[in-house]
Amino acid sequence: MPDLRRGVFYGIAAYTMWGLFPLYWPLLKPSGAIEILAHRMVWSLVMVLAVLAVRKHWSWIKQIVRQPAKVALLALAAVVVTVNWGTYIYAVNAGHVVETALGYFINPLVNVLFGVVLLREKLRPLQWAAVGFGALAVLVLTLDYGRLPWVALVLAVSFGVYGLIKKQVNVAATDSLAVETLVLLIPALGYLAFLQSTGDATFGQVSVAHAALLVGAGLITAVPLICFGAAAIRVPLSTIGLLQYIAPILQFACGVLIAKEVMPSSRWIGFSIVWLALAIFTYDSLRAARAARSRRRREASAGALDHVVT
Image (cartoon, rainbow, N blue to C red; front, side, top):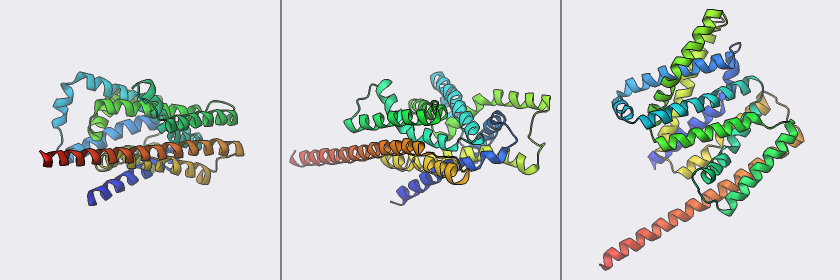
């Protein structure tokens, strides 16, 4: 139980930090989204290497180098997460915090669709209902915005693809982030050097506090991922599924209560449909998890009884 409680604490910490990200990125203005993204890549690598050095954990490098297919997948993951990070930073600093929350609300439904389309999984009736309500919500919000909620869709799809790749690679969070940020290092440094040469760089030009906040982008990237990795090995998947809603709830609160984004009634209707879809999805997931546990207990009891009889 202590280990489980520790895992839940790590999970809450990770998703809370992710949920409060909308409060951090505006502090980095006047830096543009791409400059912030480049600094995030560079300093994330520095932070991850520092963690690996403290843990003296380098043995995984030989193993990963011998598996070029995994390296290629991690390189692809790096590209996908760059799209996700860049879109998120741009959206927050452009005043679309609520739409970023929508992206992470619908991400579980996108993952279900990936399971059907890519992994040939069969959906249960309630899962189909949840996906249907999710599609209806996107339609309602498209009419509300007067356009597709492209920020939400890009975030949901890119994070879904990222998760799918990471599942296939099956490499520890810290090790994986080290490879991904190393792949991104050259283009990130190249872009920062370009800004410096043109005089458009903001690092060191605004204030010491601003430069420290840009460096801190690496810290706030690495720490939640490490906490999430610690939670994932201690907490059941069903519990992680519930904890993941902490982040978009906090993002939504930041957008409505702090950024004071406009929420017309039609937008509230769209979000209400999303929340209904997630309620159905969560209920079905918990019911399926309980059924699976009961089945395993019955099988274990039957096996024990057979052993006694034998």
